[in-house]
Image 1 (cartoon, one colour):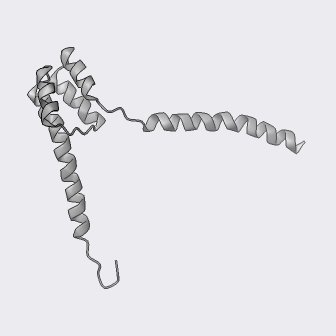
Image 2 (cartoon, helix red, strand yellow):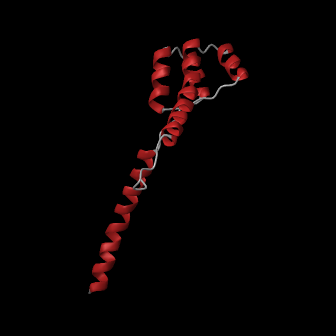
Image 3 (tube, rainbow, N blue to C red):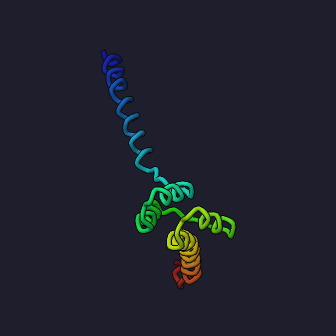
Length: 113
């Protein structure tokens, strides 16, 4: 009798656990805005501000070299968008430097913390 109850509980619980696990995985994924997507949006006539907003929302960070910068300009991506893309890397590096500087400013007092 108790075995039937146990089987019933497991039969009902396993699908529920699976659904919760799937929901957790999908909610944690954030889609980054890729360079090809930026090029596509530019060619489709999406405004610079809309492209920048999408980049901000996705929290994508770009580290562009000279060739990539030139290629983006060549395909028609505006200076405003390219400059914003470069700022994402600069801002990320500044955040890291500030975190490091903050960590170095912590001193142990006489109590050891």
